[in-house]
Amino acid sequence: MRLGMIWAQDPCGVLGASGTMLWRVPADFRHFKAATLGGAVIMGRTTWESIGGALTGRANIVLTRRDGWEATADGAVRAASLRRGLALGARALAGGSVDDPRESAYRALPRLWVIGGGSVYARTAFEGLADELVVTTVDLDAGGRARSAGIARELLIHAPRIDDDEWMPDGALSDAPGTWRPVSGDAAWRVDHYLHQ
Image 1 (cartoon, rainbow, N blue to C red):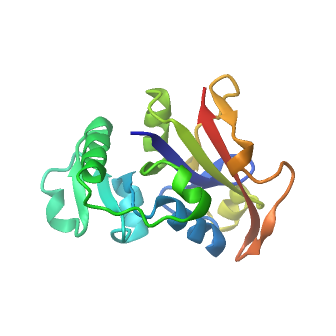
Image 2: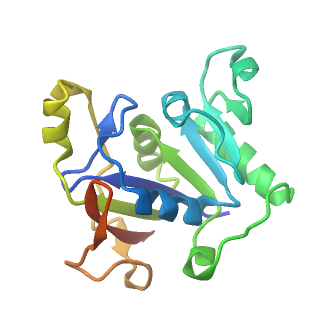
């Protein structure tokens, strides 16, 4: 089963700051939903808490070592490790407990997703587990926004590096180079899709 990682970042690769989003781009939220609906999403506990609850229409797996966490995780399953989380997600999809309602090009994407946060992306990348990346870039300076909000620079979370030797751009599912989708909320945005080489 193919594994994808999906995230949004600013042009410098900033994802957010300790569970805080530094922008609001509603059209990208819709894109994220269209890509992941009917799939299994694996996330860290901080990401789960920042979302505020289960993502509907998806199997939600939360990575945490906290014993007894299940009692507070309405709509999610706990996994103590990344590999266990991936196995639980694959099992949910193989068992047919989640239908795939995606349309058009979204149906070509994986159904098993890592959705954050930074340490989970880094671990997935370090272990070479992902087959595809779907990366939204928002046209704003997240570091500047963090400074304006009084958030220390060391709290910024960065996306994994996309190495040209490891990842190949997929023009069929990416926006044309140098183009931006219209402003939605705080910024214009674009999507790039990469395949593992």
